[in-house]
Image (cartoon, rainbow, N blue to C red):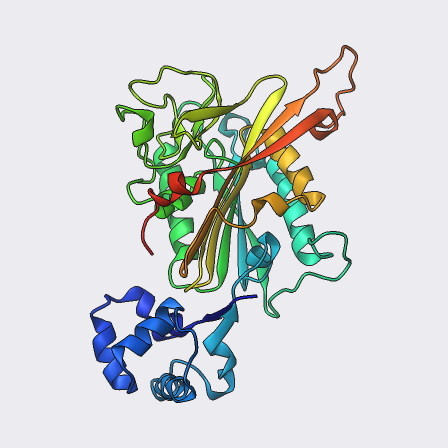
Length: 375
């Protein structure tokens, strides 16, 4: 168990330049050295007088209520995948939906995303997701779980500008001005435009809805993973969706590509007997905000990922690939292998019932860390 000192968040120092720390330390009545150690959670021990000075400042400036002290000064850093997600005060699930204008139908949710949504909600509100215990998962006493429907790309690109604006509006609304919240995107960039905003926020040289396909070499991509679209599906401009990996890489097999330990880009392919899924999360320890993507390359991959989660098989998604005093980032590619469907196979047979192998690949820390945006 690791105790986090939340001074930086309470003082709003995660939103101001570091030079302001000198002035603030003087106003509180402690040294700059003491304050920066509290902010960075590097103090081996904390003097009682220092905590009292900080508490007095917070009360005097109306930043906390007296009844909130001293517990608001501290929190416990997550020590598992489910604690990281389940202990957030507000959890918003984003699902892509398709609108068949010519048929004048209502929005339609993708089956795999719908299954994944129900599995996550059940895990959050039902029994614990740790091992075989029946102890309920700890939740915030005022926790809110909601769902947002996001229009997905059309094959003709007719509404792509509207889709980008809507996704940006949703993301900004949920990401700005809120602490202790989670944005969970279900599905990939193929079906969920908000995933592009989540990824671009995490990596320093990535821009939402701007293609990386024209880089000279694949290693120059700003994101250490890429989904190479199927030719016959919509191919929106994206920082992690791709029509090609680079000018010098002619590979065209659909799948989720990623940088491995040898700095080579390899593919978790999509074929009749293979599929893949991405698990990505970025947890800001200061604001206690979490952004996450859970989705398969295809609906089949998403449903298999949902089955993994339903069976509480998420241990390989922890610990994070990169962890600092301020940030925890996990990037995992899940490879699924299936037996071939036999003649006469029931149309009701579920994808995971034909699954014969599952492999979880942790992306190398170096491949992720060197691209991360600073917090």
